Image (cartoon, rainbow, N blue to C red):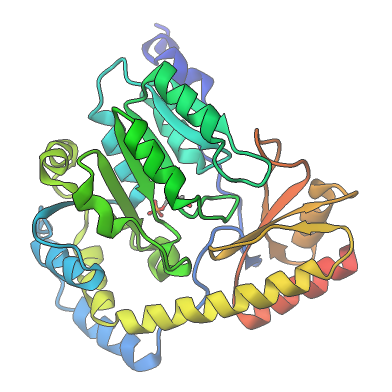
Length: 354
Ligand SMILES: *Cc1c(COP(=O)(O)O)cnc(C)c1O
């Protein structure tokens, strides 16, 4: 018996998503919010958790959570909402609902899970390199849309790992040109103050995806997608009934009641981002790219990203090494904006390494 033969060839070719070990390191690699909750809020939350019933299945449609989410993010009753165990799961769910001959498109570089999940489902992925300034290469995008007629186009807004917002006019032109679904992935919306959520009503093929991960609840695993009900209703059939667990439902509702706490943490992160951008830009040898997210991409003019990454890790600071990615300059690193003290430590260490 050869069990390997049971596995589809495209799966055999893949490598599992790697998350580096981070024990004992200052973690500036995964766009997490560094701040804890105020003590009273944490105490209130623990009290609430004690009312949870882990012996019972969660509410399969998470009605109360959806209600508070609609209120918190201003999603009108006429639009549909689908919840995911993280927005990663929503990407998978959207692609699982597509025809077997569907193709998936995104600019590159962008969020790696678009390609990873397309590959895992055997759907061809077409990456269109961004322009040098990380804007969308519109002639190439529009030509590829015409030629390949993608069933789904993913656009991260702001984009990861380049940290910029694409132009509204470009996104509208893509919506206009596409016969397929256009997913605008707003994972970093808390730091960008721009959104397409209020335009979902105008476009039947538009899905706007959000996550609470970057806002400060990465451990919960909760994402949501908003779209016209005829589309979200189809996606709802693919969603597993209990994908949002009891603790996530309770905690997310609680957090949405205290959204001002998370919003003010995001505001502090935006302030810290400006300071970090300014300090990094003052170092010789770095090209620092603008950011509308909670991370900063920079490249080394004449040093190796691997060397700087390893030396930072030795010094106790974990950031992200970008490696060779189509559409990205060579020798790129990505750092998450942390707390004031974390950022200072990072700056001190990278200064001495450079
Ligand atoms: C982090 C990230 C996600 C994944 O978010 P989860 O909800 O934690 O799964 C989705 N899209 C982009 C662009 C991201 O950077």
